Length: 316
View 1: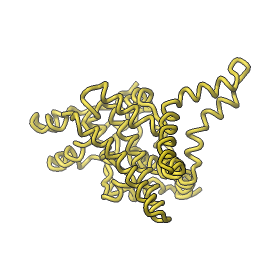
View 2: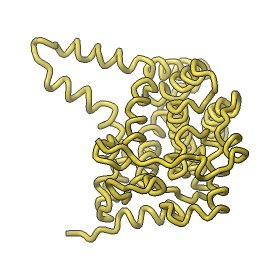
View 3: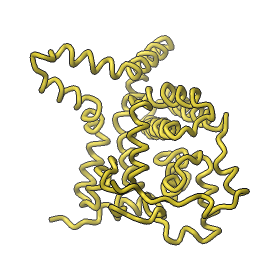
View 4: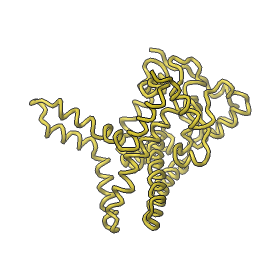
Protein backbone atom coordinates (compact mmCIF):
# COMPACT_ATOMS: atom_id res chain seq x y z
CA UNK A 1 0.00 0.00 0.00
CA UNK A 2 1.26 3.48 -0.90
CA UNK A 3 1.17 5.75 2.14
CA UNK A 4 0.80 9.44 1.31
CA UNK A 5 4.06 11.36 1.44
CA UNK A 6 4.65 13.66 4.41
CA UNK A 7 6.69 16.70 5.26
CA UNK A 8 7.92 17.44 8.78
CA UNK A 9 6.79 20.73 10.34
CA UNK A 10 10.42 21.35 11.36
CA UNK A 11 11.25 21.67 7.65
CA UNK A 12 8.85 24.61 7.37
CA UNK A 13 8.76 26.33 10.76
CA UNK A 14 11.20 27.29 13.47
CA UNK A 15 10.55 25.79 16.95
CA UNK A 16 9.32 29.21 18.07
CA UNK A 17 6.82 29.33 15.20
CA UNK A 18 5.65 25.74 15.53
CA UNK A 19 5.04 25.67 19.28
CA UNK A 20 2.04 28.06 19.30
CA UNK A 21 0.69 26.61 16.05
CA UNK A 22 0.51 23.09 17.46
CA UNK A 23 -0.69 23.93 20.98
CA UNK A 24 -4.17 22.69 21.90
CA UNK A 25 -6.60 24.91 23.82
CA UNK A 26 -8.93 23.96 26.65
CA UNK A 27 -11.47 26.61 25.59
CA UNK A 28 -11.23 27.61 21.93
CA UNK A 29 -12.65 24.39 20.50
CA UNK A 30 -15.52 24.35 22.98
CA UNK A 31 -16.17 28.03 22.21
CA UNK A 32 -16.52 27.14 18.53
CA UNK A 33 -19.09 24.47 19.41
CA UNK A 34 -20.99 27.04 21.49
CA UNK A 35 -20.74 29.52 18.60
CA UNK A 36 -22.25 27.01 16.15
CA UNK A 37 -25.24 26.44 18.41
CA UNK A 38 -25.59 30.18 19.14
CA UNK A 39 -25.81 30.93 15.41
CA UNK A 40 -28.39 28.17 14.95
CA UNK A 41 -30.54 29.57 17.77
CA UNK A 42 -30.11 33.19 16.64
CA UNK A 43 -30.96 32.45 13.01
CA UNK A 44 -34.08 30.55 14.06
CA UNK A 45 -35.07 33.32 16.48
CA UNK A 46 -34.83 35.96 13.75
CA UNK A 47 -37.37 34.07 11.64
CA UNK A 48 -39.67 33.42 14.61
CA UNK A 49 -39.65 37.14 15.49
CA UNK A 50 -39.81 38.44 11.91
CA UNK A 51 -41.43 35.67 9.84
CA UNK A 52 -41.20 36.31 6.12
CA UNK A 53 -39.72 34.50 3.09
CA UNK A 54 -36.41 36.39 3.25
CA UNK A 55 -35.71 35.66 6.92
CA UNK A 56 -36.74 32.03 6.39
CA UNK A 57 -34.37 31.47 3.47
CA UNK A 58 -31.59 33.19 5.43
CA UNK A 59 -32.33 31.03 8.48
CA UNK A 60 -32.24 27.82 6.44
CA UNK A 61 -28.90 28.78 4.90
CA UNK A 62 -27.30 29.88 8.19
CA UNK A 63 -28.58 26.88 10.14
CA UNK A 64 -27.60 24.45 7.39
CA UNK A 65 -24.12 25.98 7.28
CA UNK A 66 -23.76 25.63 11.07
CA UNK A 67 -24.96 22.03 10.85
CA UNK A 68 -22.00 21.62 8.52
CA UNK A 69 -20.04 23.53 11.15
CA UNK A 70 -20.96 20.89 13.72
CA UNK A 71 -19.75 18.20 11.30
CA UNK A 72 -16.50 20.13 10.84
CA UNK A 73 -16.06 20.37 14.60
CA UNK A 74 -16.70 16.62 14.85
CA UNK A 75 -13.89 16.32 12.29
CA UNK A 76 -11.75 18.47 14.58
CA UNK A 77 -12.55 16.13 17.46
CA UNK A 78 -11.50 13.16 15.29
CA UNK A 79 -8.03 14.74 15.31
CA UNK A 80 -8.21 15.44 19.04
CA UNK A 81 -8.35 19.19 18.44
CA UNK A 82 -11.47 20.25 20.36
CA UNK A 83 -9.89 19.83 23.79
CA UNK A 84 -6.54 18.60 25.15
CA UNK A 85 -8.39 16.17 27.45
CA UNK A 86 -9.35 13.29 25.14
CA UNK A 87 -12.43 12.39 27.20
CA UNK A 88 -13.76 15.95 26.98
CA UNK A 89 -12.77 16.11 23.30
CA UNK A 90 -14.60 12.89 22.45
CA UNK A 91 -17.69 13.65 24.53
CA UNK A 92 -18.13 17.09 22.95
CA UNK A 93 -17.35 15.75 19.48
CA UNK A 94 -19.80 12.87 19.82
CA UNK A 95 -22.74 14.40 21.68
CA UNK A 96 -22.61 18.11 20.81
CA UNK A 97 -21.40 17.82 17.19
CA UNK A 98 -21.90 14.36 15.68
CA UNK A 99 -25.13 13.09 17.24
CA UNK A 100 -27.28 16.15 16.37
CA UNK A 101 -26.48 15.73 12.67
CA UNK A 102 -26.77 11.94 12.59
CA UNK A 103 -23.04 11.21 12.50
CA UNK A 104 -20.82 9.15 14.79
CA UNK A 105 -17.38 10.28 15.92
CA UNK A 106 -16.44 6.74 16.92
CA UNK A 107 -17.13 5.47 13.38
CA UNK A 108 -15.86 8.55 11.58
CA UNK A 109 -12.42 8.73 13.23
CA UNK A 110 -10.86 5.48 11.88
CA UNK A 111 -12.36 6.13 8.44
CA UNK A 112 -11.05 9.69 8.33
CA UNK A 113 -7.57 8.90 9.62
CA UNK A 114 -7.32 6.28 6.88
CA UNK A 115 -8.13 9.07 4.41
CA UNK A 116 -5.22 11.09 5.78
CA UNK A 117 -2.84 8.14 5.77
CA UNK A 118 -3.53 7.38 2.09
CA UNK A 119 -4.58 10.83 0.84
CA UNK A 120 -5.12 10.69 -2.93
CA UNK A 121 -3.60 7.21 -3.10
CA UNK A 122 -5.46 4.12 -4.29
CA UNK A 123 -6.37 3.14 -0.72
CA UNK A 124 -7.91 6.53 0.12
CA UNK A 125 -11.58 5.84 1.04
CA UNK A 126 -12.52 9.39 -0.03
CA UNK A 127 -11.35 8.98 -3.63
CA UNK A 128 -14.93 8.17 -4.58
CA UNK A 129 -15.89 11.76 -3.68
CA UNK A 130 -13.43 13.33 -6.10
CA UNK A 131 -13.53 10.67 -8.83
CA UNK A 132 -16.56 12.10 -10.74
CA UNK A 133 -14.79 15.42 -11.42
CA UNK A 134 -14.47 17.17 -13.72
CA UNK A 135 -18.08 16.66 -14.71
CA UNK A 136 -20.47 18.58 -16.94
CA UNK A 137 -22.41 21.62 -15.88
CA UNK A 138 -25.63 19.67 -16.37
CA UNK A 139 -24.42 16.91 -14.07
CA UNK A 140 -23.37 19.37 -11.37
CA UNK A 141 -26.70 21.16 -11.74
CA UNK A 142 -28.58 17.88 -11.21
CA UNK A 143 -26.54 17.17 -8.08
CA UNK A 144 -27.33 20.62 -6.68
CA UNK A 145 -31.05 20.16 -7.42
CA UNK A 146 -31.03 16.79 -5.65
CA UNK A 147 -29.37 18.42 -2.64
CA UNK A 148 -31.76 21.36 -2.42
CA UNK A 149 -34.89 19.24 -2.92
CA UNK A 150 -34.04 16.80 -0.13
CA UNK A 151 -33.31 13.83 -2.40
CA UNK A 152 -29.71 13.51 -1.22
CA UNK A 153 -30.82 13.71 2.41
CA UNK A 154 -33.45 11.01 1.91
CA UNK A 155 -31.01 8.71 0.11
CA UNK A 156 -28.32 9.11 2.76
CA UNK A 157 -30.68 8.94 5.75
CA UNK A 158 -33.06 6.20 4.63
CA UNK A 159 -31.30 4.49 1.72
CA UNK A 160 -29.29 2.03 3.85
CA UNK A 161 -32.38 1.03 5.83
CA UNK A 162 -34.48 0.51 2.71
CA UNK A 163 -31.69 -1.51 1.14
CA UNK A 164 -31.45 -3.76 4.20
CA UNK A 165 -35.22 -4.20 4.32
CA UNK A 166 -35.33 -5.21 0.65
CA UNK A 167 -32.53 -7.73 1.10
CA UNK A 168 -33.66 -9.08 4.49
CA UNK A 169 -34.28 -12.82 4.70
CA UNK A 170 -35.99 -15.20 7.07
CA UNK A 171 -32.74 -15.30 9.04
CA UNK A 172 -33.03 -11.56 9.60
CA UNK A 173 -36.67 -10.44 9.73
CA UNK A 174 -37.58 -6.92 8.71
CA UNK A 175 -38.48 -6.09 12.30
CA UNK A 176 -34.97 -6.99 13.45
CA UNK A 177 -33.45 -4.92 10.65
CA UNK A 178 -35.58 -1.92 11.59
CA UNK A 179 -34.77 -2.32 15.29
CA UNK A 180 -31.06 -2.50 14.48
CA UNK A 181 -31.23 0.70 12.45
CA UNK A 182 -33.10 2.48 15.27
CA UNK A 183 -30.41 1.35 17.70
CA UNK A 184 -27.70 2.64 15.36
CA UNK A 185 -29.45 6.00 15.06
CA UNK A 186 -30.34 6.27 18.75
CA UNK A 187 -28.15 9.35 19.53
CA UNK A 188 -29.58 11.20 16.52
CA UNK A 189 -33.14 10.21 17.41
CA UNK A 190 -32.66 11.22 21.05
CA UNK A 191 -31.31 14.61 20.02
CA UNK A 192 -34.22 15.24 17.69
CA UNK A 193 -36.75 14.08 20.24
CA UNK A 194 -35.20 16.45 22.76
CA UNK A 195 -35.34 19.36 20.31
CA UNK A 196 -38.97 18.59 19.49
CA UNK A 197 -39.92 18.42 23.18
CA UNK A 198 -38.16 21.70 24.03
CA UNK A 199 -39.63 23.54 21.05
CA UNK A 200 -43.09 22.11 21.72
CA UNK A 201 -42.91 23.32 25.32
CA UNK A 202 -42.23 26.79 23.93
CA UNK A 203 -45.20 26.50 21.56
CA UNK A 204 -42.89 26.20 18.55
CA UNK A 205 -43.22 22.53 17.65
CA UNK A 206 -43.22 23.44 13.94
CA UNK A 207 -39.73 24.95 14.27
CA UNK A 208 -38.20 21.48 14.63
CA UNK A 209 -39.30 20.68 11.08
CA UNK A 210 -38.98 24.14 9.53
CA UNK A 211 -35.79 25.30 11.22
CA UNK A 212 -33.88 22.07 11.89
CA UNK A 213 -34.95 19.29 9.51
CA UNK A 214 -35.44 21.47 6.42
CA UNK A 215 -31.93 23.01 6.66
CA UNK A 216 -30.52 19.53 7.30
CA UNK A 217 -32.33 18.17 4.24
CA UNK A 218 -31.44 21.00 1.86
CA UNK A 219 -28.62 23.45 2.55
CA UNK A 220 -26.51 21.08 4.67
CA UNK A 221 -26.15 18.47 1.86
CA UNK A 222 -25.40 21.19 -0.67
CA UNK A 223 -22.62 22.89 1.30
CA UNK A 224 -21.23 19.48 2.26
CA UNK A 225 -20.95 18.71 -1.45
CA UNK A 226 -19.34 22.10 -2.16
CA UNK A 227 -16.86 21.48 0.63
CA UNK A 228 -15.94 18.05 -0.77
CA UNK A 229 -15.51 19.45 -4.27
CA UNK A 230 -13.31 22.30 -3.09
CA UNK A 231 -11.12 20.05 -0.96
CA UNK A 232 -10.27 17.18 -3.31
CA UNK A 233 -11.92 17.48 -6.72
CA UNK A 234 -9.40 17.71 -9.59
CA UNK A 235 -6.57 16.67 -7.25
CA UNK A 236 -4.30 14.18 -8.97
CA UNK A 237 -4.52 10.54 -7.92
CA UNK A 238 -1.25 9.15 -6.54
CA UNK A 239 -0.06 12.73 -6.07
CA UNK A 240 3.47 12.57 -4.55
CA UNK A 241 3.66 16.20 -3.41
CA UNK A 242 2.24 16.67 0.14
CA UNK A 243 1.52 20.32 -0.73
CA UNK A 244 -0.96 19.11 -3.37
CA UNK A 245 -2.94 16.41 -1.54
CA UNK A 246 -5.78 18.88 -0.97
CA UNK A 247 -6.85 22.36 -1.99
CA UNK A 248 -6.98 25.56 0.03
CA UNK A 249 -9.77 27.88 -1.13
CA UNK A 250 -9.88 31.56 -0.28
CA UNK A 251 -13.20 32.41 1.37
CA UNK A 252 -14.75 35.82 1.91
CA UNK A 253 -16.99 36.52 4.89
CA UNK A 254 -20.15 35.45 3.04
CA UNK A 255 -18.57 32.14 2.05
CA UNK A 256 -17.35 31.61 5.61
CA UNK A 257 -20.86 32.26 6.92
CA UNK A 258 -22.76 30.13 4.41
CA UNK A 259 -20.34 27.55 2.97
CA UNK A 260 -17.03 27.20 4.82
CA UNK A 261 -17.22 27.72 8.59
CA UNK A 262 -14.42 27.21 11.09
CA UNK A 263 -11.47 27.51 8.70
CA UNK A 264 -12.38 24.37 6.74
CA UNK A 265 -11.26 26.12 3.55
CA UNK A 266 -7.58 25.78 4.62
CA UNK A 267 -7.58 22.14 3.62
CA UNK A 268 -4.10 21.93 2.10
CA UNK A 269 -2.67 23.13 5.41
CA UNK A 270 -4.87 20.68 7.28
CA UNK A 271 -3.43 17.78 5.29
CA UNK A 272 0.09 19.05 5.85
CA UNK A 273 -0.46 19.37 9.61
CA UNK A 274 -3.48 17.21 10.37
CA UNK A 275 -3.28 17.57 14.16
CA UNK A 276 -2.94 21.35 14.11
CA UNK A 277 -6.00 23.00 15.74
CA UNK A 278 -8.20 24.45 13.01
CA UNK A 279 -8.07 27.99 14.40
CA UNK A 280 -4.31 28.07 13.71
CA UNK A 281 -4.60 27.08 10.04
CA UNK A 282 -4.98 30.71 8.79
CA UNK A 283 -1.84 31.71 10.72
CA UNK A 284 0.04 28.71 9.32
CA UNK A 285 -1.06 29.74 5.82
CA UNK A 286 0.20 33.31 6.32
CA UNK A 287 3.57 32.03 7.55
CA UNK A 288 3.90 29.70 4.57
CA UNK A 289 3.08 32.60 2.23
CA UNK A 290 5.73 34.76 3.92
CA UNK A 291 8.27 31.97 3.52
CA UNK A 292 7.40 31.50 -0.16
CA UNK A 293 6.29 27.91 0.41
CA UNK A 294 2.81 28.17 -1.13
CA UNK A 295 3.87 28.56 -4.76
CA UNK A 296 3.40 24.85 -5.40
CA UNK A 297 0.38 24.50 -3.13
CA UNK A 298 -2.98 23.71 -4.69
CA UNK A 299 -5.12 26.81 -4.12
CA UNK A 300 -8.20 28.53 -5.53
CA UNK A 301 -9.32 32.17 -5.25
CA UNK A 302 -12.90 31.21 -4.32
CA UNK A 303 -15.55 28.52 -4.36
CA UNK A 304 -17.08 29.69 -7.62
CA UNK A 305 -13.72 29.22 -9.35
CA UNK A 306 -13.51 25.63 -8.10
CA UNK A 307 -17.07 24.88 -9.20
CA UNK A 308 -16.38 26.23 -12.68
CA UNK A 309 -13.31 24.02 -12.99
CA UNK A 310 -15.12 21.00 -11.53
CA UNK A 311 -17.93 21.34 -14.10
CA UNK A 312 -15.70 22.10 -17.10
CA UNK A 313 -16.06 18.76 -18.90
CA UNK A 314 -17.80 19.08 -22.24
CA UNK A 315 -21.14 17.32 -22.61
CA UNK A 316 -21.01 14.13 -24.66
